[in-house]
Image (cartoon, rainbow, N blue to C red; front, side, top):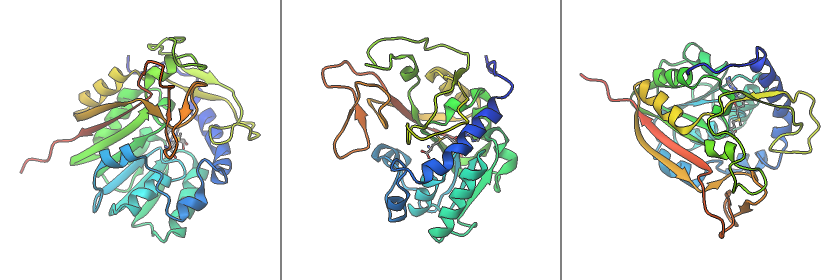
Length: 281
Ligand SMILES: C[S@@+](CC[C@H](N)C(=O)[O-])C[C@H]1O[C@@H](n2cnc3c(N)ncnc32)[C@H](O)[C@@H]1O
């Protein structure tokens, strides 16, 4: 099933929710903008390793939020980075940050648009690297259309790099992550009204309605393959990036959270690279 049932207001509700969280995130310890300005790299080790050398590459970051990963790819030597997000305040914040770091629009440009309109919205027809993830796919109702959009934007010889929270996580009980409490194959949207944000759970907020979807691993991989991309690797990771479950323990000296050592492990994140064959001459 390509198109999942969605309440009519999903896009407006989600955008209003994200718009309201941008100013909170800009001053949060979670995003720690001062450290970022001073050179902190928001990419995790595994992301940096799996992405490889980005020197001289053009990069499109879909659902870029306030642009930290996008700008870190510019800092890592990408020739030209484009960030796209449907939240206008997020895009404005990313533009301001780019200007502060001294990147002109030719080096780092940010576009306010829905991910499904990316082909028409971004300045170039294709990119060496399309980068996305870390809480991106759950906001999208139709993973087939997402994969087609991504595939259209990867240049011949280029690739998609996706790192995401593992969909199995949506099925586990919140306290221990040791029990299957929810349906892994649920195709219905999740509607949540919890105030606050992962970056500050106590922040007062009023636009709290959000609509999210689960995308089983097989549907993501199959959609990318059907869109013409070749899966180069799919890695599953036993750690995550925030206190998603009560039993998770922060790992000293890293951004990671892991299950206690006596608990059987399950995948908490995954990452993949999917490439487009080079053009024939
Ligand atoms: C969790 S954030 C991504 C976070 C990013 N990995 C980071 O840590 O900065 C998800 C982003 O997706 C954006 N978004 C959600 N639905 C979207 C859509 N349909 N089109 C474009 N952007 C969307 C939100 O505005 C938000 O900035």
